Length: 486
Image (cartoon, rainbow, N blue to C red; front, side, top):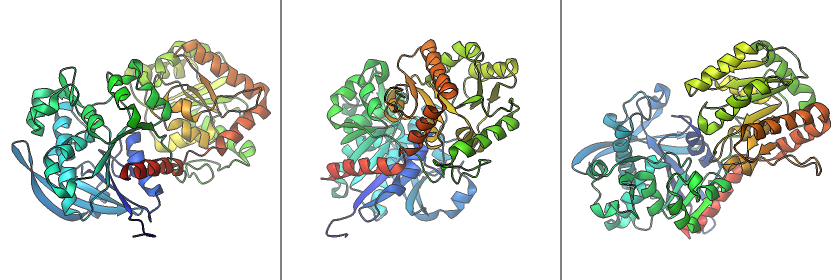
């Protein structure tokens, strides 16, 4: 007990978390966010599957807690629980080699559907043996969508579970966990009444994320603009009606980034460390080093634009492909890092061959190279079709690399467009999903970079001064937890 108030107990349930397993931004949120809460007021713990593909060094540190058998519909399944404390946060791992043995955390959707039904039920079933009864179970993405559903169903007869609240956080509405109803009924053992249109059923199939949204006490997503966008058909992925129906309990909370890991002053991947005071002198040394390393023309005056991304349609690469030849006529260099759709990988390889010394295509992923791009480039291009939150623009702001973005989702919430009349803004943005509107915005940025260097440097000053660390997000989540727990 602290100062007369009970500590609020929160359990994050998710399919991945750094540093144990990561395929995307979800893992950063689940692994990083819990560290930023006031420990005297919040006891936040995390539960994820114990995948066999986790590094051995992590598996060796896990301590066995207990195991039991659980019914999943008509089968009886082994559930092992292990734990490990990392950076002051307790992580629990649900063990079952039948489900979690593959080479990757996700595989075929029909296997994942059963795997995460098992994980969702096991996560709840494990609670009584943990000596930890959460006030709130905070679920992340479709893989945990059945947690609020199961809690509503078979667990309600047990007094231990009564009064536990749930939150469903949508990191990307595109992924919903959809499979045919008959199979899902058979896997979950849920009664037919759960498969009605106002519950799990959607367009004839069963939808895990929909179940989580319907049955949770609150719904969040990862930026305020995205929370508004998903109420509209264009962004709503067929669930816009449901998002509107739940709008009074839906809120957007922007993700943060780990300001210790992403810090130009201490970043071990940079040739030259710098900060908000000395970037004018020091940052350019990283640019020259990267130009040499990548075989680009070494010229510290030349504007260098970076891209670190999955090379997919969602990220706006069809726009880039459309204007690539035109852009390469300008006084710019382009450095690309990432993998994805073959046509975009080959498109960048082609332009790197055609415009040697101007374009560098790095069709792989490297943590070190991503940090070098954030720490060396003048601008960072992110023209997404939709972007629930986006982390790359937050990293580029932190490194004083001016973001050029499309006004959607988290990009709109985190990048303030430059206004030359008021001398405000932290980046450049365009509204319509249109290749030439994007090109005009890039060229406007070029003009400021070349012709109004002092203005450009002031944009960097403002960009490096904004705070998108996890501290801000944690405060918003604290408000939500306090509101929900009453």
